[in-house]
Length: 234
Image 1: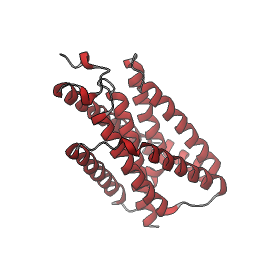
Image 2: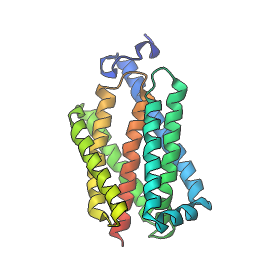
Image 3: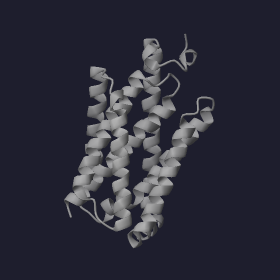
């Protein structure tokens, strides 16, 4: 039977060829999202938008809180679109919207790393992020371990982290490198969780939603690896 004939069936229960195609499509779409964000972020960092946004968020904590709130709203909408089983167009729209939003939210941090810090910080953060992501991904594929049991704990930890971020913006305190390190660990947990879901729980045909889930963890991991490195050099 063809790949499309197995759509809607959990990938773990599909034949090997359909499962392999689902995994391939998931990571191809992940790569596409990363590529779109990279190209757009590079263009924005090297445009007048970058100093404008840097000035906006540095001038007021509330401005950054609003930006983060908008990003979170867009993220929820993008994930909802990407999970629509009846509309392929909406799925791709969700992934594209998230990739664009990610590029915009990364601009201030990338601008600081590119123009106001050691030249080695940005490439080192990129390499470390890819090494961590690749290592965690490989460990799941090799062991075939199901990490879905981590979902509730990760969700609670994520809500706690979000609360700390909002509190820091409202009350003006700095979270620092310790928080960035904790978030790196949390994102590592999410990568294990989402990767095992690709192997065990996502249905065939849901590769766009799976790619978006993986990308959300990968992009956030990069954010905090870069934040940790920038903070460590202050």
